[in-house]
Length: 341
Image (cartoon, rainbow, N blue to C red; front, top):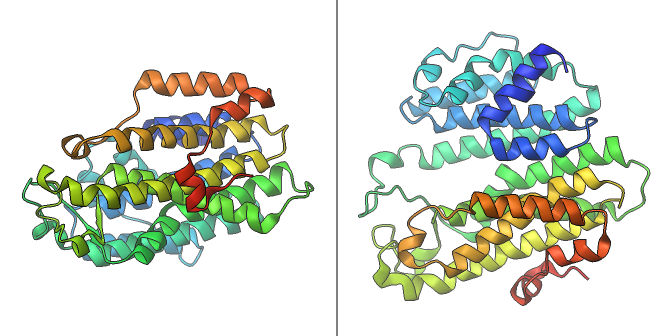
């Protein structure tokens, strides 16, 4: 890898997300640059959207200009100076400061890969813009009684749309890139494979959403943002929370089916898919067992548990009888549509 690529897809990506960097490192070299660059640009747009100290209109304008550059609709230089100044983390500053370098690297992709990267980033930025327009001014008025910022969507359909725009589309992109470069001639059910890839991404995002304790239709049970986090409401809150955990687990069950649809010899891709699924399932188990007070804090899988999952899955990957033991879906996940038979 040349020095400019190493600076972006190596050093910067590792600083931006250590967990994704591990996944990227295990992927075959044929798909690593495209997926790594798409992730880097998505993180750049996400950093813009999340910079709350910069006015909403300015963030929307910056997202629009970056999207136009990504799509090749504009060649105007980007000026993210104020956005860079508002970043507390060095990695976030570098993401914005090196946006032009990332865009230059984008032009080195093949036409087919460039089209796929542009499609997924268009979907992701559309979701970010939608969220900014929906919740952009909430920080001024939406704090809960505990001082935490709680954002509520209005329907299950909105949540599903959100998880698709943020992560389901990534599962679709990942599938198409890997299919084109790694096993283009393998016969499989293309429609089901892509659908499972989308559910895979949605499941991972839904786990993140639930770990951050959002509200979505909970107002119907008189669980308003101001009172949702109170332990006194746990008996009302818990059943609905469990339903969403079931949904997340069902999506991850589809992700596991996706992983096992991959050709057996694609060990690297299998591991790259298995790791977030197994970590997601471990997180779901912790969320199911957590009490109301624990749920007000970010539930995490410990470093030792992460290392255990990585080790066991790596050892089991070439051995089908051990691989099957890594993950057994619960009856709830199967009932929710995650049947792996």
